[in-house]
Length: 245
Image 1 (cartoon, rainbow, N blue to C red):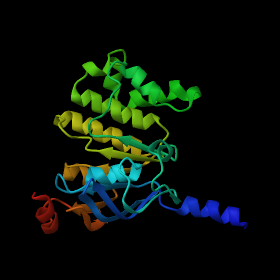
Image 2 (tube, rainbow, N blue to C red):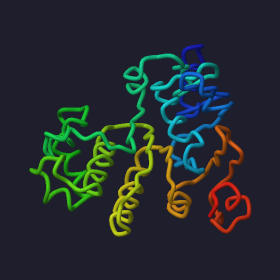
Image 3 (tube, helix red, strand yellow):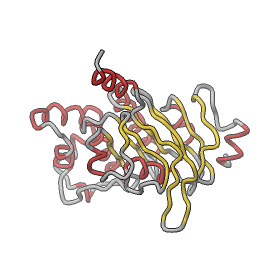
Image 4 (cartoon, rainbow, N blue to C red):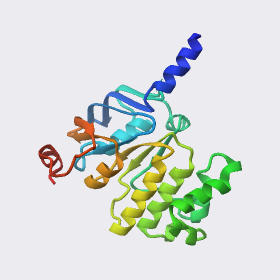
């Protein structure tokens, strides 16, 4: 096997996302204090913790929206630390931010179509989005600025679903949604997980444990625990201590 073949095999075996000892600041505020985590192909990983402990900053660090002052971020084995965010995204990272970031003057259908990178696949991808979210089919001609928060979240996840991403960074998908909408969002995320890995930030702990294969628990800008999600509940003593459940 040639050196080129070895490199290609190594990239395939590498985690989709590997953050190592990230020290990330906002100005002089030291937010991430040595965060290390990884997401492998085909898995969903939850990042849980109280508000303000650095979860969203971890996603922003992965995308280089807020690059670490020291530490390393690798995507598919390639060091992307300090690279422009649009270049990091071309390596297969998609982002569903908490604030959804709709093109509010575009219709639902136009918001979904703009996320499809392969123009020959627009019809098939659009149908995939509407199968995941049947309610959106009825709203396809409505401007997203006129939708409810739950409907906008559906559009945001639908865009991630059709974007041919290897890894989706999903920030608080159930935030502020009614229980019946949360279940629809959860089902859509399960659909996404069939084709892409996910790093999921989610305050709804039972939902996070239901969706994820593994989880990292954050506190004070640090990873304080990591484990598989099997059998983990909010009654766990450590979970109660760090999440205040």
